[in-house]
Image (cartoon, rainbow, N blue to C red; front, top):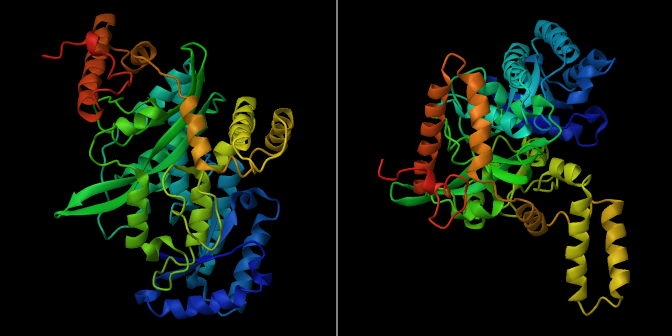
Amino acid sequence: MNLFWSYSDKQLDDEFFEERVNRFKEKRKEFENNNLKFLTLFKRDALSKNNYKEIVFYEIDGLKKAGLKPSDLVVAYNNNFKKKTFSKLELNNLKELSELTAKLGVKIGIFDYKDVFTYDEVKKADFRIKKWANIINKHNYSPLEKLIRAYIIVSNLDYKEEDKSKSTSISRSVYGVLNSKYIVCAGFSEYFKAVVNELNETNLKVFGNNIGTEEEVYGKKDYGFHRNNICYIKDDKYKIDGYYYLDPTWDCGKNLDLTYFLIEMKEIGKIQNGMMIDCDKSLKEMMKKNKDVYRSNSKKDHYINISPAYYSSVAKDTLNFGDNEIYQSNNKTDTTEELLFDYLSERQDFKDFVTLKQTEKDLNDRRVNKTFDEIIERNYNRSNKDVAKNSIIKNKKIMWEYLSEHSPHVDIGPIQNALNTIFKDMFIDKSKDEISMKLYKTLKANFRKSLLYFDAGSKTAFRESEELFDKSL
């Protein structure tokens, strides 16, 4: 199904509404079997409002009066960011709406990634997410133990890409993944984020992260995207407090891999798996190669009018330490994580960091004619007033510096002890000695993998644990 993006908030009164409808009618001619749908996208909170039915049917009636057929229409609620499972009220309302709109021939569901998922698909996916969260939360786990258990659950799946006849959302959206046998990097990232979100652990935050990739395809370099995660964790039991890089895709499979788990930010550049490179070049090349897909002002691509919806939602739930211009759309969106801003704005140490960084910059600027105390006070008031909107903070360089400086080293000890606690619950039929052997083999396998995928000078937990294992084995 191909979707034609439509602005939903009071769109019937929008001065561009008629133009959008006419443009849809023209674009529809290019598709066989009427396989282009006019998507009306609502914010998620509209699903739980008292007048949720009136909102939907007002839109449908208005679109029908504008000359669109019910079979042209798709109505959806956006769940692309701040992802949480749906409440009983939301699901009941969605079910009722699905039954009512089906009688009219209008599809309704939840928008995620680039597709719309039905009530049954969302209910099934949410059930699985809640099941895993309940399994984790029934134990008295620390934040690190919760994070590892969620990571193992998600990365236990095998990477499998859909064939060309299927929507890419089937392997990239959490709803697609949990209703199919397909999952790729974006799916791992979103699934992991969804499970951790469901834990409601205040000392755990997981964010998506995009990086550039470079591969050799038929003798030529091919550039693309890879999606993984960055997390914040505070664990008093294991004395951990910081931001870390994780990649459930590269640890996927049935081997209990944790090689890419809790990597210090400054160690990212020492990954040598051959695919991940400095983002700038690859993302720029990807933009040139796929300008029809990634630029919403393209007149060639049928996702042209879904791009603002896609980027203004997904980009807000994505970190991207690569190219400033990766998301170019008519809707100006900041490419750095809005949710991370919200979270960091509550942390005084980040405000202090921003204040000092800007003060350092001002002191080296001869045009700033103020005393040190005056500069400090001005910058402190500026960052404290509205840290999330301060242009200093939206500079990815200062964000990267902050994350790097707040990413203390985690050695093998906490991971080993946390795994031991988790294994006792995962393998309840095994003896203490069997669990100890399982733990040893898991740590050893991750150590050997780290030798292959990290530079010799890297200081990841496994890369530094050489003395624990016999390399000859």
